[in-house]
Image 1 (tube, rainbow, N blue to C red):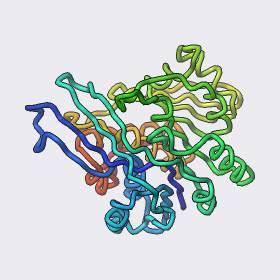
Image 2 (cartoon, helix red, strand yellow; image 1 turned 90 degrees about the vertical axis):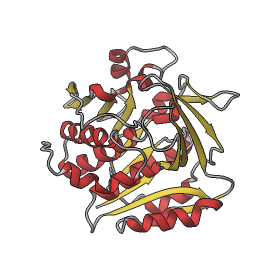
Image 3 (cartoon, rainbow, N blue to C red; image 1 turned 135 degrees about the horizontal axis):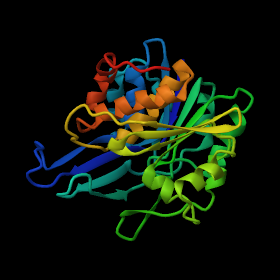
Length: 314
């Protein structure tokens, strides 16, 4: 099985509040699309191939590619040197649990379709809008046209596509005027509860959004709710069915950065293997729950082993 992963790499700079129990007040490491890539590499078998497609700044390029050697099922030929710096994202956690401020610097140029096209002969495609500027709408249209005959499933995570940037580099929620075009003809779509409520200029509530979005040739919409779990809305025989999937805890929450990225990667992988979305949602909840117990991407190398004891149906 081959899976292509599209989205921006980041250097995450995480600032924890005093007395938060972390070894260092500031932690830095690669993040962004690496959470998705590392999750898929951990879950996939030795004969599977993960094709990441994104640019890396000149300063980090050699070191980053060397780091990926720890994952033998990752093909790094789609990773290219990009002009300028790698995205840098600064997270500032407050004293109150779960409250953080996000700032962004040095956003990379959108990934050109020419870089993506050689990797579209795949069993599944994950597009994760890490920065919100990862690809243009025109590139998404080109991807859809290129895989239309093959009917390759695309899992699309809205992520930062619903975020703007103010004069102080802080991210803020803002509606997406062309959201219908972004959603059109996607196999499965992922967004958080906050993203879904802030997506439209009309400020649609969740039921209205579902009724507007699902007719756009979407098979599954998953709305993530953090510790409360996930809702999956499926289009089955022209009928919409809602499944509420409970959250799962694996211990104290240490860091939620990357949980949505892990969720999306696990959801796509499980749905490709088992051809079912409810089981994929349960499996992805488990994977995201495990991720919340540690900081960074290193712990994802053991993700598959940690999930082996968890029984998830298809």
